[in-house]
Amino acid sequence: MSDISKLESDLLAAIAAAKDEAALEAIRVSALGKKGSVSELLKTLGGMSPDARKAQGPIINALRDTVAEAIATKKAALADAALDARLATERVDVTLPIRPVPQGTIHPVSQVLDEVTAIFADLGFAIAEGPDIEFDDYNFTKLNIPPDHPARQMHDTFYMAKQKDGSSHVLRTHTSPVQVRTMLKQKPPIRIISPGRTYRVDSDATHSPMFHQYEGLVVDEGSTLANLKWVLEEFYKAFFEVDSVELRARPSFFPFTEPSVEWDLRCDRSVPGKITFGTGNDWLELAGSGMVNPRVLDMCGIDSTKYQGFAFGGGLDRLAMLKYGIPDIRPFFESDLRWLRHYGFSAFDLPTLDGGLSR
Ligand code: FA5
Image 1 (cartoon, rainbow, N blue to C red):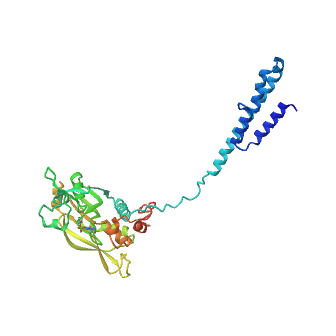
Image 2 (image 1 turned 120 degrees about the vertical axis):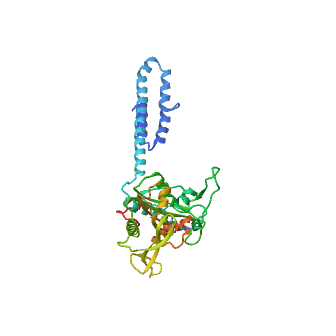
């Protein structure tokens, strides 16, 4: 075997045995680099006689081409193998179950808000909203509580500085101003539910300076107290997830409703720490309500000789406390993660009437 043939077979064997791209590169440099074995052979052509060059030229050039091609082929094969190996290690089994997501829970107030709106949406109520900073006029005057009226004392109000134009604002003390906003812009029939944040100068285990209420309003030509009772019964049955409830009406007073009725729900509290609705000998105060005072209808541009309506409202936080056995309202707003993990709800369980309201 000639020296050139031996060099070629040695180089091809080394190329075939190269384990990775670095080893292959070393072979390329040793053969085709500036001082490589094949390059050195090519340099000898210059010192040869024309006849010898004619004979050796094609042989040495063929050697260079063969080695270069073998290196290129091996390089592509090594790159393919490296990609296959990477793909094998990075493979994801999409059929595996997702990892549990323990972080983050739905706050009980958000949960209850979603439950309440799901129930009322099913009863055909639209959702209405109003701002937290409300006109004094809408929070009080148009609800038949004029300035200096003693009923203003019933609400411990956060007043805001008077505006240049003489108007004054309050942090709304209840969601009832949404009644005003709705009636001012919408003609009957009206059927709305309005959950939202409310504020009063008040703080103890069951009262918070910022809390949540829900408000219902129905205005039509023939709405009655009997309709109101039916709506509340349907609501409490669905909310407390029981087949039947019993409501007790008590006379009450709200300047914006006449007559005014407070509703109690029959419940059983005989087992300490547990409350069951629909049975038992206890009564739980749940909502204020009444027929919308005709003066309020007129102040909001609705003809009280043609239309009548009923309204009701209560505390959302209170509903959450009752349904989920939360004894104190203050931690609701302390953002303590341990409390939230204990009382919070899964973000994947949206309350729906057919899928189930609570977990
Ligand atoms: C009202 O606010 C009336 N607007 C309800 C109403 C609406 C009557 C429509 C008639 C027609 P009241 O002041 O009673 O009513 O408050 C309603 C509920 O809000 C209370 O029963 C209680 O559950 C809740 N609430 C009141 N103050 C606080 C507070 N500081 N912290 C937590 N919840 C409160």
